[in-house]
Length: 141
Image (cartoon, rainbow, N blue to C red; front, side, top):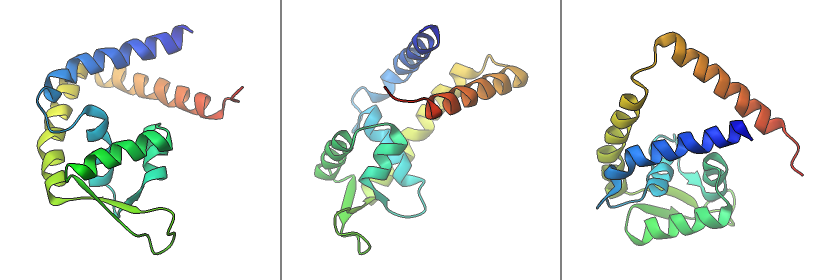
């Protein structure tokens, strides 16, 4: 439990650090995360794929996309390959939001990790990759 507890503490510290960015912002942090995935994708996304990449349930992703669509930040269109799964893309307004907010969030994150040496950063990344592989391969009870 000490590993998971530490991960939760780290996520909480990150949330506190970026919280001021979202005060009065047009989107929430989870909404921006979804929008960033779409912004950096080579083609329109599918809700279930986005959900898996972000670690969200399909229902939560569907609600997030519906809120973003209602505010004009994403659009959905029929998927010719699978009519059950719509293609999702950012609108020009959604692109503007990501392009304005992402660099600010990235700047905060760079400042948070600025105290790490290159060697420390590499060791942290190696440990996190090991943890990711371990968790991905763990049986779910």
